[in-house]
Length: 570
Image (cartoon, rainbow, N blue to C red; front, side):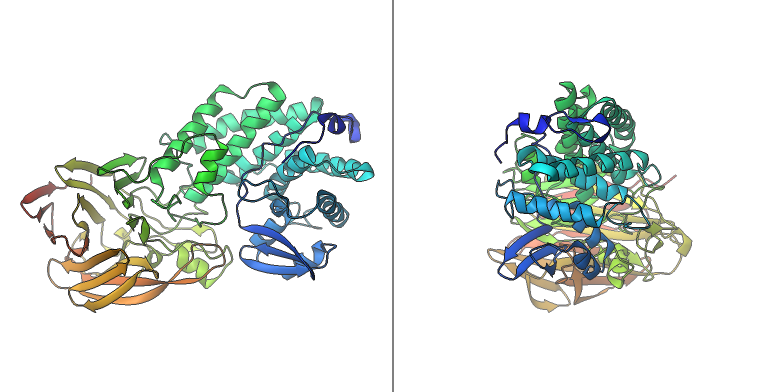
């Protein structure tokens, strides 16, 4: 996107004596594909969260808003991110003067920062997302004449509104986005008031980074999607501080680098995020675009030699295009479980670069059956006891009773790469400890074993969710063949003393508002049984696994053998 002369921008003034400090064209990019504006012969089509809405060429904001049922959809309408180029390109969806006329119409329709009058358009989080869009557009294609003055007056009013309504009650990623909006406005405008916006953003951001960015580099809400969102927000704030002050706070570079390093370590071989917690593939830019925005090299996700490592509360195994990530961390924050799911000890996997085992993703943020399903245990690749969720998820973003994981143990012994962990989420059912052991054998099978410590009788169900692009052939009591050429895999259920397994279907939501079908494999048994899934290439020898009821397991594959001894929970 080419610049207009900065002088044209700086000569404009706004109310209360504010002036424009200078252009900020590097912010608010890349933009995700989740929101699009398309012009056609009949008018305008807006695509928000994979739903299409139609209006005339005048872009009648109120008409579209009334069509949108979900609040998140209305939020995306008022972000205005569909006005920006997509995928790192430089082509706007319409002529600049047309976009500014539509923004002028928006100012007329939503001029009052009153939550009673327009709660979605003036929600602090929405204002935080909209300010960088307008600033970027103004920096590159400033509007002409009186409209420019109206836009600047509205921008300054939005920044003042945001300064008074920072979401200290919600915190988390919302507050980070608030600070992004405030910092961008402070860097765009000049004067004592914008300088105070910048100082406030910098001061609060330092404190929030100390709390919100874990030592591993992960964002503390433990959603890969929001991790990407926060990472890009920090990059925009770094640019804003650099533009206004000639340099950003020293700690910010280190935080951004640490977050990027974490992101690179948890990606599937397809270069996309795992769908842990509230995560989808379409509401944030792709990780490749993120690394390009940060001017960092994209990591190698398909090492020739097998490697395994711990990153934070995750254990990762990689061997070429084969990948497994084991989530042994808490479901989320005790004080902020909004984006947490009942998914303790879940995992995802890819084989040959294709996704093989997936969590359900997210369909919506409404009080819907889909929302309840996505947050529940049965939507994840983990053990469910007595048909109950691990945690008491309710409403859209709430969680009551919950469990916590123990410490993860991981290591390597010869060709055996392994990790195991426990959780106590079913202690109210008389099952004080659930254990999961995952073993990845180089060039060999993978084993996922689940068992329960305790004396209560309970029914067990261990699930695997497999995208429908995989074809399941000839299921029998001994397992099934999975095919996605050139890959041919065997999935074999097993147990210590009797089990049943079945093949069905389940919902899969890789994008907001998109419902797909996935294979659901369910391995069932009762305590004190041990349930074991084995995944292997069809031409690789099966492994044997014996897990005792108390504290040990023996695994053998070919001429290799390993014995595990498990520590008891204190």
